[in-house]
Amino acid sequence: MSAPVRKKRVIRRVEVASTRRISPGVQRVELTGESLRTFAVPLPACHVKLVLPGPGESEPTLVDGPDGPALPDGERRPVLRTYTPRAWDPGSLTLTIDFVLHPAPGPASRWALAARPGDRLAVAGPGRGYERDPATTSLLLAGDETALPAIATLVATAPLGLRMTALVELPDPMDRQPLTGAVVTWLPRTNGEPAGGLVEAAVMESQVDGHVWVAGEAAMIRRLRRHLLGTGVPAERLVTRGYWKAGEPNHTDGDHGQD
Ligand SMILES: Cc1cc2nc3c(=O)[nH]c(=O)nc-3n(C[C@H](O)[C@H](O)[C@H](O)COP(=O)(O)OP(=O)(O)OC[C@H]3O[C@@H](n4cnc5c(N)ncnc54)[C@H](O)[C@@H]3O)c2cc1C
Image (cartoon, rainbow, N blue to C red; front, side, top):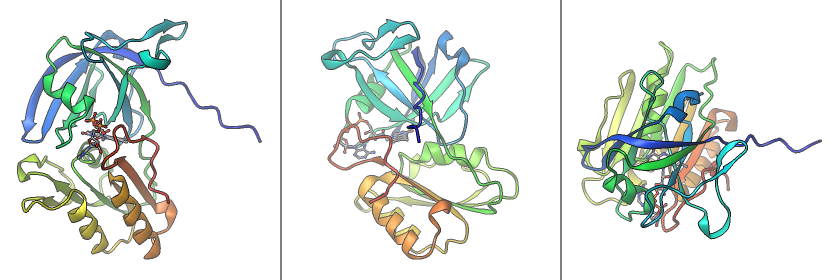
């Protein structure tokens, strides 16, 4: 059997259209550019790779090849980080990204905080999102603040009649966002709880009778996956995604929570 062919991700040069702090822990940055004319969001909870300028650079280093911009190898390779298209408006060519301003800022969260209209970067992707089983009648969505953009797209695109429960852990109650159509429990870490602990406990206490989508810190996601499989949730009804890993910069975007 031949190996599956991995589709090359298109890299598009874009610039910042606007940026604002929408809540204490979230910087919303809108990106635009003519290159986005061929962009599309295939499924909710998909992701893009942001290609960021390095220190002292006004734009990321890219090489122009026959198929458009490409990433250079070696030391010139720019910084990449993974984010969720929170919104995409093909009319105005506006791609919205919500950056969590987490307590150990890396290049992406630092960049988002400093970004100004006209700043240049590139977007690679999008990568695959969540393909809903059309037969499902109930969906449990759970995660931390990095999962909220994906959860918001999952809720916004759900068909009428799908019963959705969302368990969302946040650093601050003011980081809540409307999730119309889902029964939402917000889990703010108001007493200095460690990241992931509240949503982990809430999922473990939940009765699961349908499909589950959960994303957040990688070690917590592994524990939850083991727990859910152990309580009889079939693997094909379960999507678990490690979105970041404590102590590890640039955690892989291919972490599906398996041991
Ligand atoms: C498919 C996918 C979609 C994602 N979507 C989003 C999104 O829409 N919005 C979003 O904000 N993030 C999202 N993330 C998570 C984001 O990619 C990571 O948080 C990323 O590490 C941030 O990059 P950075 O440069 O700020 O920090 P890095 O340089 O990657 O890491 C620096 C340090 O910060 C720690 N760290 C990273 N993230 C967090 C965090 N949230 N809380 C506490 N410590 C952290 C790391 O462990 C490391 O020690 C997504 C991840 C994936 C895989």
